[in-house]
Image (cartoon, rainbow, N blue to C red):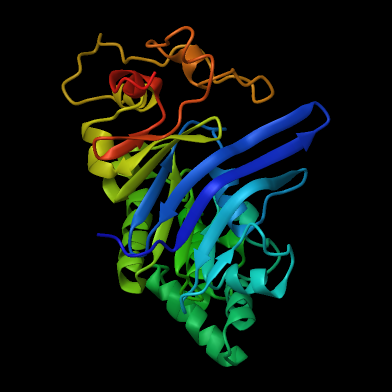
Length: 336
């Protein structure tokens, strides 16, 4: 049994209002994130994973904004705050951002200030949220650099980002994110630009720190191998919607949505012959300004049912140990 979630996302919609029309980047997402558990958000590029994560921290760039839904954050003392309703730029939001909820961005080189030393950037974060002196902040920062596996941390404290490798920069970003011991860590594809050895080290590090601090972790990725390695819970997104969610074993052993089934079928397997072809999902992701009516996946689905899938959007319904948004299960249950 889980305790109450750290974050309850309900009906979240984040839209971008462009000159060409409204891009519905996130369109009605419902998710729960728990302490000491890793939720992996999986899906193709452009499905809304990063925008959903940025919506939690209220750092969506213009012309995007949250237009509906709730992001209920349960604080350390039991109080609940709807982050979607907190005034942008308020002290309350600044206190939560970085201190209670931290984020590791996808590309550390563009996330770290290029003309400030690594140590100073970490120390500034500590001084902003914790009541410590400058000397104590420096000591904490050096200890964090050591904890995340950076050799000679006292020397690296004085280094600029361009003097570090990609893996080192990512470790520095993790140190900065953990500097205030957040209750929720959002990692947006933190290993995409890294080699496989460094990738494994970073994932092991996040898992160790999760256990130590009992953090909730939201890990955004498109790598099924990473999901199988670190996740307890999984949510599959397609065109701004969660089409399936459940625990990692249910998703991998018995996927219920045609999109999830197609993603898993496209993974190479041991023993495949040289001439064996991997199944591919036919077609392309629709243009965001030309969303299909009904089920957004219907234009690529081999089990499309005319007159049903194109008429209305399928709701998430419980199917075994997971939930899937597909009319096939509703039809089997006699609800269509």
